[in-house]
Length: 377
Image (cartoon, helix red, strand yellow):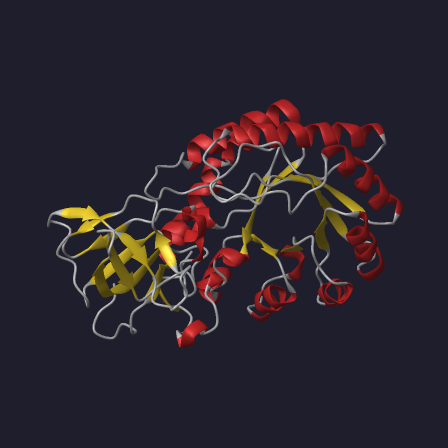
């Protein structure tokens, strides 16, 4: 772990061994799908695009969900086979589709007819997935209605895809990030099965069903384990999907979240006029803690003074923006003895921290990342 040669606080440490173990655990949890529904793990690069992580997962047989030309270029620059990439963002320019196609990408996701027509024009003959909006319970960090068409519209769009000369992969849904209710996947797979059945009537075979990401990890609140989720997914697939339909899973947080620890420092402690104690850290919403927006994610914070008495505190970042407050409603108990200069560690911060970090807002640099552990098989 970090020693005297550690970078200046704040910084994120990623443990590759934990990433490797998480990938293997997920693969094991999905083994119940068997040969009838082969599982394909497609890493969501946006969660943590560190080169070491991408190389490790590529070596273990992962595919990659990429959201932009930048992520495509990064993966290809690391030697990733373009055949393992899926341009999964349904919001993309024609020029970017063409650039991805020229680079060898042959798999795209869409949720509108206009995007579908752009794919057909710029990436002829490619394989496509249509994203629909599943009726899943709300997750801790919901997408709202930004993405996804109605399931019935997905059928019509995939028929249109065939007519445009594209290869139909199948339907695609996402239950929302950090989904704590296993029933969400049961509901989504059942709805996807109805899409597959409707396509079969139109003589359109489906190669795969993409169940997206959303696999949770434990923060302050415990999350269901991969084994439990794998069993729910396998049961739903057996009930609602035809045999020999691949099941694509797009984890991000589940592979890298608990592999990261942010090392930060107390900058100041203040007693506000209303009596509340404020603790200001050198990391905030703009340099790594974006997922504290709306206090969706409650990270565990540990200190060297945890044996001392504790009291509630408001946690805030270092910038001059009044919105740079991490936890004001969430009950956070920290030692009453914390002082400026004290180190703190924010656990399970491997996902959506450095990748969300802004470019020098207020002059504060983006979050530094240090990668440890072997990339061995």
